[in-house]
Image 1 (cartoon, rainbow, N blue to C red):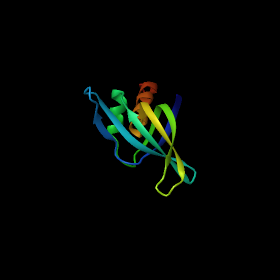
Image 2 (cartoon, one colour):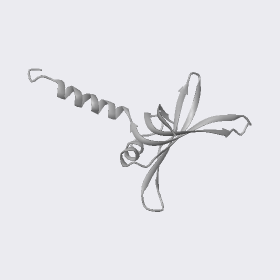
Image 3 (cartoon, rainbow, N blue to C red):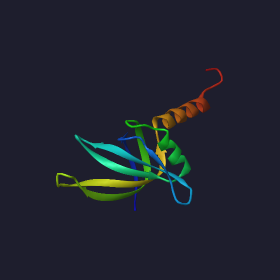
Image 4 (cartoon, helix red, strand yellow):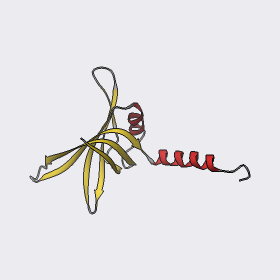
Length: 114
């Protein structure tokens, strides 16, 4: 397995699913820009926090995921083989999380006279 951190924008709204054992998981498709091109990353999350973070987002939202990555190849309808990535997301970071962490750090470093 490859441990990865990938950032991009959600291609579509993440989808909730329920496994046969009753556990909830989420899937999403992330579009990661590579210059003028884009690479699509299939994301699946099982961790409760990662699932909740993904499901709070919508298509076009910025997101970063970290987890185990598996490179894949798929064949387009017009014939050429194209790269793709599958990630089992352990953590999901959104602009909301960054803002909240910055506020927490700022509050803890402020002096009472500020």
